[in-house]
Image (cartoon, rainbow, N blue to C red; front, side, top):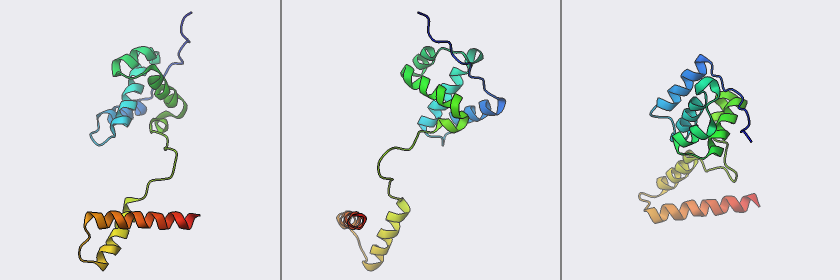
Length: 131
């Protein structure tokens, strides 16, 4: 039984330029650059490059190549970023640094064990407040 017919992935000139820039930029995360490269490869051959061939070229699973192809078709460039992870949001680095700065102002020296203790104590206090 032949594979399902692919919906052509056609890129505008602006989209192609943006994807190529993401794939080349040094400051782009590796994951985002890989997503951009996968989409660019899927757009070859009038947008009908087989997902299996793209997956083999980049050393990823067919499911991963299919995922980024379909996300791009659905959301265009906005679909290339990873979705947020489940669970509690990460603590802001700025918030932690501000807390440590306020503690350091009270003391002239904070050794690493003291910093770890203060951060843990602050997390426990915050968790107790949330109850």
